[in-house]
Every structure is written in structure tokens, then in C-alpha cells.
Length: 447
Image 1 (cartoon, rainbow, N blue to C red):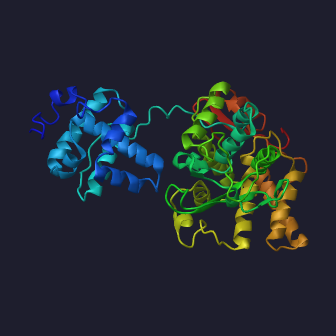
Image 2: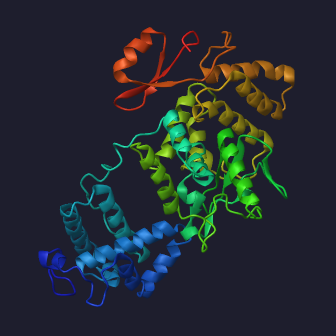
Image 3: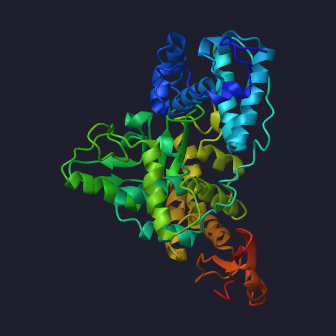
């Protein structure tokens, strides 16, 4: 079978000639610029930008790579009969594998071709890609422990990066929520509903503080909310006051995380990842910046067995698609009643010790924070006493009725070869951390 240029589709001759035309520059960004000279490609690309600039850019680059590899122009791909194009794509997949490209990367490139066809009201059947869901570059990455997260924070030289780390690790935010669209948009101060900006300082009136993520920042185009931990509030308040002391006038439209560059107010999502990655490499932890979101998810899964927190609530805080978050009447709504918001705040507060990087959390501190939230829900001080005690005991792992006056939250990470000795000393198994380490909880007598 031959293409419009006379070469056999999928032949070695076709793949040996990588230039779409002799005038096209070889650099990646120049290839996409050349492709945008096609009116329909430009329209397709620009219609995707409002949803996600990063996704639009990746789709365009993948289309350019496919056109270059197969010597097909976008209009030819759009007009080609589906069986003929499927053969071309299958040969493309084989060549990409020979070049050493990983399965998930190839799948994204094929999906970009399918998106271009779909835009032109054409279909492309499912193409089999070997090892499509084998993420070889990430499966050995580890989720940090509370101690390792503490080390990251202590090794971070500036408040801005500390805040970015905690927004991901304690609130489950994606980098593209903090800053996106080449730094033109991102999370603004008005999204923090419990933040008050005065002339000379900023102050949080409630902790944990609720953060509203509007649909334009959400990956799935549905609003959702999450909370800032007491530790996050401490760093963010210091960071914002530092900016005010440097002469910046803060308003509700000011970026939560400010770019230091002259062109954009917000950081690129890629710049956020780069800033955090530098600290990770400095500390020497085998993880990606995105593992901070996995830390949020993993630690709250541990909290589910001790508190009233549910998996769906955690998913809604992370901005995942679930009925509880994306429904018109779900928790993502911006006009939830004060009582519902405070109940969610209470659940987050009970789970907070599983997120904080502090090695110990005294019960008196935990009791005062939980009591404040329960009183805000409308309970009398007398009625709230038992509820506060039960909440504290659930968090620290003590059964109701047991003595817990001096209890502290103090889980430890133990090499697997030492687990037996710790269990004999009265420690309780919590979960496996990885193939070589587990999490143990000491009993009150051993703590």
C-alpha cells in the first residue's frame, strides 16, 4: 500500500526520511510552529488550550512527531480510510518500540492521533500497544514517610518552595492547580475562604482552612475543595507576610504562589515540579514531586481506619472524578452550608496527625483543635466533651475508655528484618511502606 508521496506506508524508506518537508526546521518547537500554519490544526489546538494548555501542547507535539515519522500531513491523516490509517499507526507503534520508547508514551502519541481524527469526525480503532500500562520509570519510586517529608521541608531554603511542597502533600493539590497556562493563571488568595487580608498582615480565622478549586483550574472541569493543614497555614502565613514586608500589595486576586519572573504572575506547573525536584535530589530520596500527592492519599488511607473519614471524601479533596465530588449536589459545590463545611473540617482535623511532619503531637493540642471545630458545629461544651475524647482516642489509636492522658501520635518506620523484635516489645503493625520497610505503632506502654 502506498501513501500520497509514493512511498509504501510503514516501509523502511518512509521511516528513514524524517523531515515532513525540506523547509521544516528540525527543532521540536519549530516543528509544531510549522504545523500550526495549517488553519484546521491551529483551530484544533486553540480549542484545546482553554481546557489545558499543557495537554494541548503535548497533543500538538505528538501530532507533529507522527507526521514527521510517517511523512503524512494532517489533512491526509484526517481524510485517510480507517483500515489504511490503522496499519500506518501499527507500524508507527512498532518503530517507536524499536527506538526504545516506553508503552505509556506510545499510547499518548496514538491518543493524540485519535483526538485529531475525532476532531475531523473520523474514528480510529483501538491500537494494541505492548506494555501500555507498565510505568517502568515510576514503579520503583517511593512514597515519602512523614520523617522524609520533614527532611524535605528542613532542606528547603525558601518559604515559597516549602508552601508548594505542603500544598501537594497536605492538601493533595496538583501542580497545574497552583500554576498553569504558561503562568497566566493559577490559585489565587481568594480561593482560601478562611484567609483575611488586612493592610499590614494576613491572618487565618479558621484552621484547617478551606481552599476552593474552581472548574477552570480543575483537571476534570469540576470544582472541588480541600483544606490547608495547621502546618501549611504556618508556612503560608509567613510567606505572605514576607511578600507584604517586601512591598507587595496583596488582594484576593493575588497569586498564592508568586512567580519571581517579570512576565507572569504565576509559576508554570513545570517550574513547580523543577523547584521541588531540586530539593528531592539534594536530600537523595528516590521519588518524583508527584509522589507528594500519593503521600496525601496514602496517609489519609491510614487515617480512614481511625476516624470517620471515607475514601470518597479523600478522592474529592484530591480532585478525582467521583460522584461525591463531581455531582451538582456534591462536596465540590461552592455553596455548601457552614455546618457541612465544618463537619468536613472536623474530619480533616482528626486526620491531620497522619500528615504533619512533626514527630510528636501532644493530646492537649489535638483536643483543643477538635473541641473548637465541634463547638462550631453547634454542640454545647457539655455534649462535646465525650465526642472530643473519642475523636482524640481514635486518632492516637486508643480504645474509648482506656487511659490516654499522655499519649502521643508516634508511628515509626522499621526495616523488615527488625519487625519481629519490635512486635515482641508490644508494637502494632500498621501497614507495609515498601518491600523493605513497614510502619509500626507503639502501644502506650512502649511509647
